[in-house]
Length: 92
Image (cartoon, rainbow, N blue to C red; front, side, top):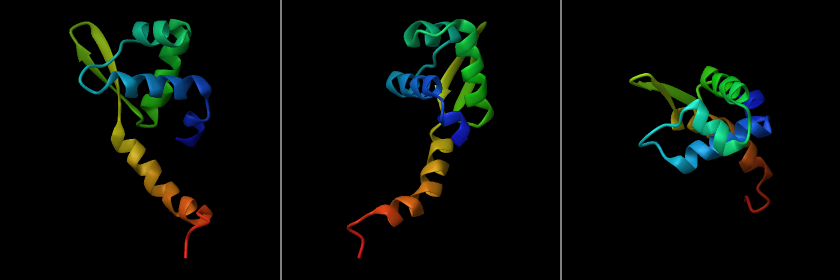
């Protein structure tokens, strides 16, 4: 998952999905147009993000819609929490 997050384009896609909200998803074409990557690149990056659970795909007729998965993100925060606490200079 951290490898997936290390890519600038994937982080931009996650930020786009976050800004778009969970009510409706975005297609590969939407993601490509709004991030400036090719459709092939958008499809590849969405596939990587789906594989690690950060993005979910649903169908609306012939369209495949992608949304952010907050469940996967909560797992990252849980894992990172001890590291953040160890770095906190205000800790007693």
